[in-house]
Amino acid sequence: MSEVPFDCQKAWDYIDEIYKDKDDLRLNEYIKATGLKEFGPPIEDEMSRLFQILLHLVKPKRVLEIGMSIGFSTTSLAIAAKRYGGSVTTIELDETIVDVARKAFEREGVSDRIEIIVGDAIEILAGMESETYDVVFQDSTKRGYPVMLKDCIRVLKKGGLFLVDDTLWPPIKPPKEWNDSYKAIDKFNRELVKLDVSSTILPIGEGCTIAVKL
Image (cartoon, rainbow, N blue to C red; front, side, top):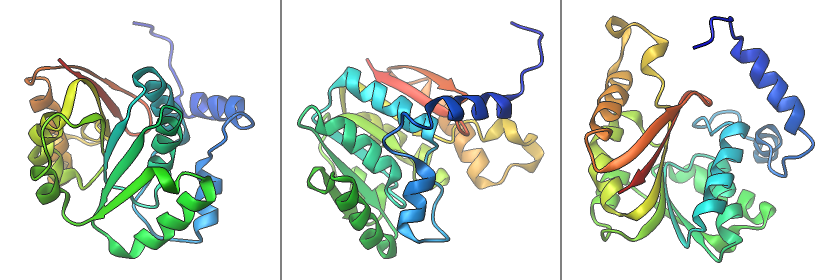
């Protein structure tokens, strides 16, 4: 391991500068277009690029997203899935944000590839059929991560891709300062490695877990 100090912010700024004219979908522009001031935090631009690369490898027909927010990640997933005739089903608890997301999907040309289910993700996921999705992306309430873990893997096809946001929250604070969300993510991370998957956690954004169901 290198002993040279590494400034993550400088690295992120450098990457952003490199890709600023390349990305067709950019978070800041997307947020401005919604006109909203408060909403659940979406994935970062670098994670959007990563997801699109991974989906181009998987060539999915069916993608499940748990936690839509303003729909930035949904749009990113749909853009990639659309190329292969695929679609995205997204579950969102907050009804008030659905109309905003729908307008964004229309604007980005992916509305025909996205189905929105409004409701409690824990209940909805539990009622879904097994092995029906090529990709599952988890970005809902963090306390629900360990609760939904087995169902996330259950609805995923063998060889399918499991993507999870914010999985490096625990190292941000010492354990004595963890709230229920931090504890839930730590539990999720430790339980995932016990399942029949191959996985790793990347230091992108606030942590991104990538797993493949074996």
